[in-house]
Image (cartoon, rainbow over all chains, first blue to last red; front, top):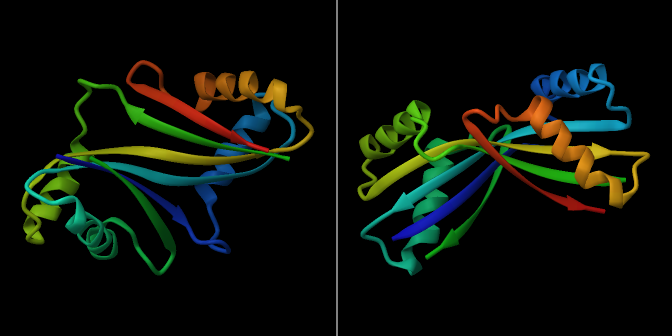
Length: 81
Length: 81
């Protein structure tokens, strides 16, 4: 079994209103010095019936086709066997 | 400046309908052998005016008070200076 950890983040320059909301919430809780907050997604996938050597290509394809919106998002992933 | 990467995941045993939806979408795209999908959040925080030695405690507190719902979610974080 292969476990993949996928991190999806907004590209630089794409506004992140949800991150801004979290930043303001932290400020109103009294945390000063929070200069930026960016929110992304973290996805854990478990894959069976696949060889390690094919997993990278497969997961890349999953990210491109479904998991990430590559117009505004970047993705990276780690594979654990 | 300190950069923190916070990972928030659902606790084991907590149902993840969003993860299930992604799993079914992957299956309907033709990806067989996806045995589990869990969705979490990934948060990047930039903190200024704080020493490295205080950052851990501060971020833990932010997670407990705002970023994670500790009844159903776990969190972990990494700090980069």
